[in-house]
Length: 384
Ligand code: AMP
Image 1 (cartoon, rainbow, N blue to C red):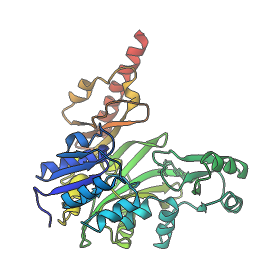
Image 2: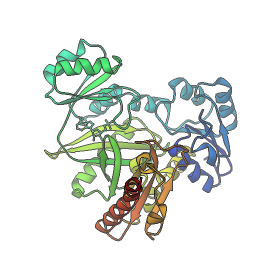
Image 3: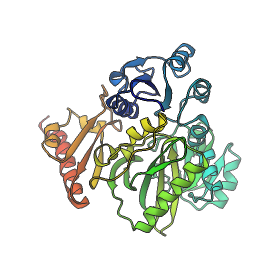
């Protein structure tokens, strides 16, 4: 077991790294963050910010020598970086799991190999692959880059072979998946923590609403029958066990209009849809990341209260920063801002959690706060 006062390293200094750092430091660990950005949200919270690239040999040598264990906040850390560190100290999750999650072709193939369902898809490695894929999939479909896509980026909706060919060119002919667009009833996510010895703690299922490809709201508990919730969490557990996963794993699912559960993707780290755990669960997803990294058993994931999480995007800063007093005056609303210096439309700047005795009340508070925060920008606009 790695105990408090040890140094934990995190690759990546965004909001996920920041919340990991806060959790680790509050438990008495010291944290080193590796991130090239001088203003990284996690860097300012860490004991040490090593401001260097993810392939920088001197920085990696320092991390390797100075940390007791290393984790990551994003799946696009170069594979060689994880392998270099793995040869020197515990790296959780390990490079093998990260390699599966970072590539949609490997990920979806792996999910299918475990006997779990995904939306129908074909791997597109070259232009010629499109013809057969379009012949076998029903349209409409989505062409998604295999790597480096997030929040709906790197995706092109297509309705014909010609559009798929155009889309492939638009995506620089990078390897892709062509995936059938399914009729969604709901989007769901499972966050779990699995220790090195295989002990697993599952958080309650989250129900997610995306707007423009970006997560907007998470409702917990998800409004689905318990049989479906068990099925979804069971699917996530199968994936974690199959990878002999150690760390926090997020699994995003679709519930189709036909009542079928499909796995969309997984993330080898805490996830935006798990931010509700910080205020509403006995153990947060970030504490679980610390625990699993340090060889401790996962904490209890008991839900203390129904909760609604709402993302705060940079759009709200248009033209001035939002009226936080509208949110902070609610006794059961919790604000989390990531300390990013510049707001841009679509950029995740923070989130808030609304807790209440029942989900409907939490939803009502969340929506009231949403209008108050949005209304502010409009009012100022009108006076221009
Ligand atoms: P992704 O980047 O794969 O997580 O996709 C972002 C969002 O696009 C998802 O959360 C869904 O709202 C939507 N989406 C992605 N793939 C599909 C699909 N095959 N069918 C319907 N909607 C999808």
